[in-house]
Image (cartoon, rainbow, N blue to C red):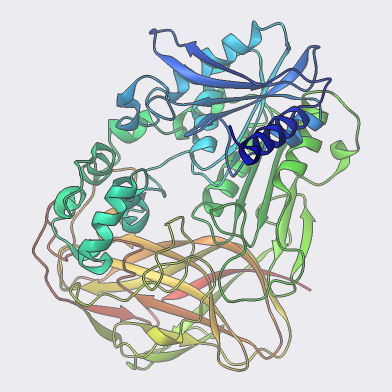
Amino acid sequence: MNSLQTAAAVTALSLAIHCVPVDRPAPEELMVAMRDGVKLRTSIRRPGFGRYPVVLIRGYDTDFWGGISSRFLDADYVFVGQATRGHLGSEGSQGMDNRFFDDARDGYDCIDWISRQPWCDGKVAMYGSSYYGATQWLTAPEAHPNLKAIVPQNVNPDPWQRMYRDHGAIQLAHTARRIYDYSAQAKQQVEEFGWWNWYRHLPLITLDTVAGTRPNKLYTDYVSHSTYDDFWKAIGTRHKLNKIRIPVYLMSGWYDNYPGATLEYFEKLTKLGASDEIRVAISPTTHSRNRVVGDRDFGGNPEKDEIGLAIRWLDYVVKGTENGIRDEPKIRLFVMGINEWRLENEWPLARTRFTKYYFHANGEKDGTLGAAPTQDEPPTRYIYDPDDPVPTLGGNHSATEIPGIIRAGPVDQRPNENRQDVLVFTSEPLDRDLEVTGPVAVKLHAASSARDTDFIARLIDVYPDGRAFNLTEGILRARFRESIWEPPLLLEPDRPYEYTIDLLPTANVFRKGHRIRVHITSSNFPMWDRNPNTGNEQGMDAELKIAQQTIYHDRARPSHILLPVIPE
């Protein structure tokens, strides 16, 4: 060993010694057996040599985002990380192909093992985002007596509703990540194939191999299970909520995929009343690492300290520390536009005035938006050609950013507004600030020449200089117009139907001089897959048909957006 190598070795040893305080045990790496004998890689980090409450994460890794354990250790929690089946050296390679299916049972077994360890005081909480959040939702209904609280972030307890599917459609960019996310070679193969060529490939069911990548069961399962069947029921928590009887702190971001599910399940758990400690926090961030993204300014304090919020809350609900949180409102929201954090007591807000803003157009592509009901106006028509879809510009999703192809967040929507297949309805400039905080929905009266098609609605804040920033959006695949939880029903071509398009909730103050805008269209690609308009089995189709869409806004069929207006 030369002098440079010796110096480097001494430095590394010194750093290693100082990374673990002298009064803390060294980290441990173990293989912990589940009830079927499969062993999962498990990491234990302890704050000291006594007995402590435990924070458990379960997911792809034994830590995440570069390491979060230190803050929990500093707060006197043992930090246990477990890699789920097939990940990071854990046994059960099929876990990569059957994600979620073993996580309820394995989560219970892991808590059972933790509870028997001499360093555990008998109290366990779970923490984590995305898949690490899903494992919490799956474990909690198993009702292990030592599980005292969960902190799920940026995830939907029901993947069918909006995760890999979305109100019947496929979240293509997000779902297709399964093919390349865990293999540098696979991503390179897709890049060489060309991102646009790849996303446009049909039929979707063979997308996993078209670029020479290996078959991917996760992806093909999500595509082939195109209705709410036993597959989705097995990995969802919708029907098990009454079994969750512990405190829950939900977190998300307005530009993530999951603020809707986050607030929906906050509301449901609150109404169930099994615990009086159900809380929620939502920032103007996206899915990845609580980051503010996009092109809109949210001021100097938009991010939330998720770990700090969690630790203070866990100190109360797990340790019993009286730190004042008991008396604080249960809802923490960032209100965009005025860029302020606000505490609230209920969802939707009790003072909400749900207000209809009607679409007016006189048959033109670009129309107006206002509180005056529609009269006898001619319908507006546009052509939806799935071979020429509307490109994704920002949005509320959890797809990996691909430069020039897709990214999340608020992005100026004007580049899409000259397209003939994007209807634009815009209010007059506001004469005062108008706050919109809560669930948003569009009632759309429409007909299509197709047996199945998509309708998409988007709410936009238009600045006085013309910039048009997306706030929220939603899609409905027409065959699921009655219910996404029931068998689909194809359309009778050219027959008018009433559609309810649920946009994700939002919190935004449209400032004086701004305008409210709504887009109506039939594609947003590659965020969502293109509806081929054939009515055939979803994901299996290589045929594309052009559809003529008719949007009604007359006295008998008053298409409108329902906004949750908050009085001054």
